[in-house]
Length: 404
Image (tube, rainbow, N blue to C red):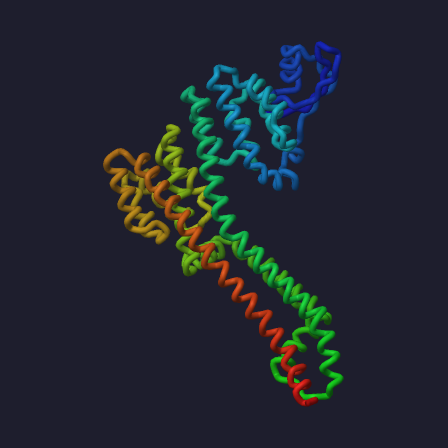
């Protein structure tokens, strides 16, 4: 349905601006008058103005704001407040300016008679396919408040799981970055000064010292730009490669096959799958629709393909466990538990139990991985800096010995 931007005079003789959804400009004016507004200007929003902007892309960082919005909306709906009134209140309470603008437009569209699910479906940077699908079911069944409460709990749970993985990667990344900075400072600033002193002695330098000096000269010459350009090209080619189906499949397969870290990623994927599927089934969505939604949010091509095959088997009247087991992501024990839950009619409860067990085990693995990776990186840093120190100090030590 077309959308129109409007300027109108309200009962207080003040100008109001916003958007409204209607079949035509005439219908939009009629609707505004029914709201006590006198439209002074109204024009249709063109398609290109509704496309995502750079700000919308970065607005994904407001996940906590969306979770807070969902929780507050659920509370008001469960308290008996109308959806339009609740959205009007939230337009004043949401702190994130991008989300506040989106909520305002959603409120205006709901006021015109559009469903809440259809209104939020155009704001994928805030409300993903899981959110929209569950809201749609909640509206149809008349349990939107309870559904939003479920979504709020699910979002909190998912954010905690994502935070664990971020914590695992952040500390090693900071240590590695610090190591690179230290090495570059020593190579570009310290070594040239020492090199100048060594060359004045006229003595033959050890091979390791010549290697370090050569590396220092490269990093201070135009070759450094060539290396940076080469790295940037490789990164660009990698990004283009993983956009293809085969490239993404190869990337995910290598990640899952990596020692130590691969098992942690597997657990995170399976925990997300079981938790999301259980939540969708609990909201009233059918198994086929739930699998369709889950396949879009796994974040792993191998798991996505397995879920799509499972959905096809469901539609043909077969079980879902075989393709999940053959994917290599879900281990046989978990696949067997899913099969038991499917046969007993308690799949939702079984999936919740699997998810909780995986998250508990994931906490232990994250802690162990952090403890192991920290000393490994420190030892690596110490080794690199030690080699540089040895290469630069060895000639000075030999020179001082020859003087006595």
